[in-house]
Length: 218
Ligand code: C5P
Image 1 (cartoon, rainbow, N blue to C red):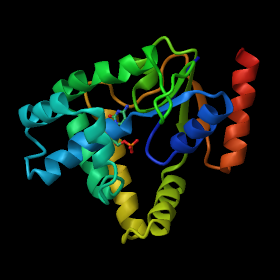
Image 2 (image 1 turned 45 degrees about the vertical axis):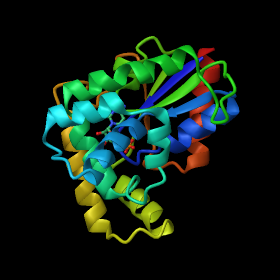
Image 3 (image 1 turned 90 degrees about the vertical axis):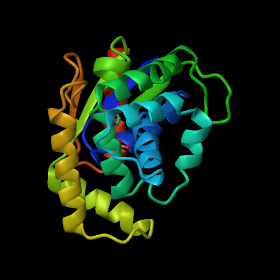
């Protein structure tokens, strides 16, 4: 079974994806990681984030091991990593260079320890529209901008990242705009996606609602 979960930042995709992967014993692919890895690598190498050729080169050379190493960097999940990811992900050549790696995972999904799985849960912006258009079930998860900014702010504070609610809100607004307006694979629901607004839901309610929908569809 392949499940895709797309939507804007901090809408509740990651929590839902991890919970569904656990519930249905599926592998999990957080596709934002590939763009964060390319963006952060550019930042660390002091490359110009507006240089598409440089970003394409970094994307083409990205290996899974390098992505995992970069994911341990303190800026991988910070505003710095998020903004850099959003900038490089708008380049069609970068998206093209990273597509196969993401699609191949659905052919041979594996758990974090490398053992094979019977399917995967994808989380991202275009996993239902571009990466896995033939997924068995697609969700598009949203929440109001204020709720999302509040959630992300609390996550940052819990991780000890020094920021303010206003900064998080501004960063998220900019990223959503860039992700939705880019020409290639913009953030939008797949035609057959199940829409979920999680503004008034806690994570337990969100997970229960999604499982109910999957069971009804089976
Ligand atoms: O989901 P996350 O916040 O980690 O994603 C970081 C950025 O990577 C997003 O803002 C978006 O620009 C980009 N992204 C994308 N397509 C995906 C996943 C993430 O363009 N499938």
